[in-house]
Image (cartoon, rainbow, N blue to C red; front, top):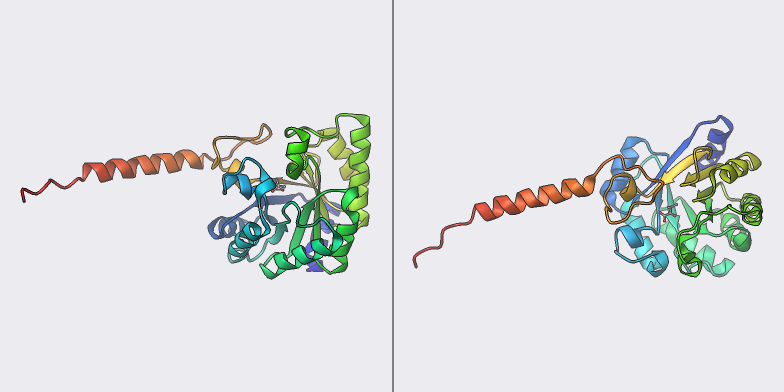
Length: 260
Ligand code: KIV
């Protein structure tokens, strides 16, 4: 697996952009994989876009492993990354146990939300030989304490903390780092400052790669679309119109009541 992750470092060195998307189920994973996506993340955003929770803080390890297993059946070429849900990496030992469960479920790498504060967990995971993707910036697992999805890096101290986080996760052995809704200029500075690829979400065009929640990209979760997303399709509308056509066809084909 080391080669798979080294490939992304090499892509950064050659200026080749990395494309990543989320998947929660077999057909989506297979379609993305067949389309040539580089990385498929089983993101805990599935708590919102599949399970219907308000945020990702109710997602359990059992939920994530169930979805990881189904995604793994559909992936042949992309790197499959499993997202460790909240409170499954509170200590280094717990982080390694959780990461191993993801590997048993078919993930080739894992991700957790946190920077310098989680160096011990990241080191423990990479020491166990499991490739690790970091995630800094806006951390959705902390949305309740934060009181919303706030752009990160607006102040000097926030920008410095982000840079320190990026350096810390690289040093701890991460092969890449997700930057979530970070001010574009700060994301650019981080991208220049570290050797591992930055994968941006709502963090501007200067990152080494981009990731989106597939439901947002294809318009499958129409009740909320983040500001930085321009949907490439409107699948929710397709579903609604197919359902309406089916309902109409079914109702129009009503059999006449028999006279008994
Ligand atoms: O859970 C998720 O989908 C994520 C991506 C948005 C990076 O963490």
